[in-house]
Length: 140
Image 1 (cartoon, helix red, strand yellow):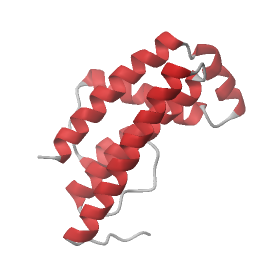
Image 2 (spheres, helix red, strand yellow):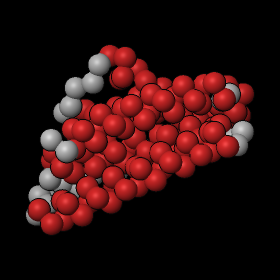
Image 3 (tube, one colour):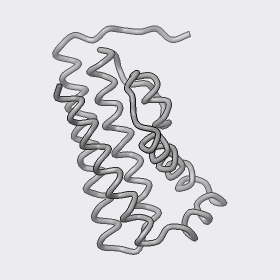
């Protein structure tokens, strides 16, 4: 069984900065991939990473612990104990799928078939909005 170590202020701040910076870089990568290439599945994968890291940053702030080893966005939301609208939870659930579907051959092929510029830009817009909200919560 794992154990929990409460972080001191300095370590907490360091981890928040680490996850926040990674989130911003991955969102920028997602945006560039989606807007400048036709590799939409890759862009969607980076969207997932950006939100995962934003949530991990918020986890560190709220729980004063290291972020859990998970890629599940909904699981992170639950562990943090924050409330999202049903619509945003649905969007997070859909974006969650981009993590798995971008990794495994059969699922990746399925995602490649569905990933269009329109789909990718819609999710980019939603992910940027959700990331902004998470960062607002982080700065409270």
